[in-house]
Image (cartoon, rainbow, N blue to C red; front, side):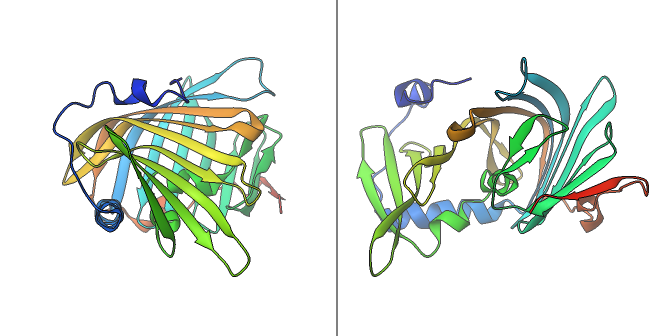
Length: 252
């Protein structure tokens, strides 16, 4: 896993002439780049670590994304499906074939999956590919550093100002390399690091994403291959095929 607190380590391979942009130009560029990715299909190697497990879970699988909020992830080990997750941004369904259980609930909260011994926050997986929820309707504040910009997404009300999220953007390519989302109490809910960007069909996509949820001591590392961007996906691929004998568990 990467050094979460050392920005210099992340930036060491990003070389070139730095840009000078305003906060509005940076925000508009991020939203524009995010909206260019309409679909994504990629093979993925996943490593999951959580306190309830004796060691990391390693599996291979498939990631599917369709703008703005359709997401599906499948993981397998030794040619056997471990899990199959589908989300539309509001609700999710997670099928665990070994136990013949289907978990369903709201995307925007943590859920304990007893069969896998993990905590999940399905809504955060969509945030890896679409920053719009964090950047729209907010008042960003910009910090300018020699090699990167730090964009603070603030949500203001009559009574207070809340830090909604942080985006760290390199000043050479204008690409986000670190992303943080905060809880209402100011604690960090979610952190992600994006590395090894490459161009795919008009989009710049990170080939490696590391995620962690500090409060739950859970981390997920994903390395992508066979990436295909902006190709037509049948909407049916985001529907799970669930056996009739499977038992549905409503987590909410």
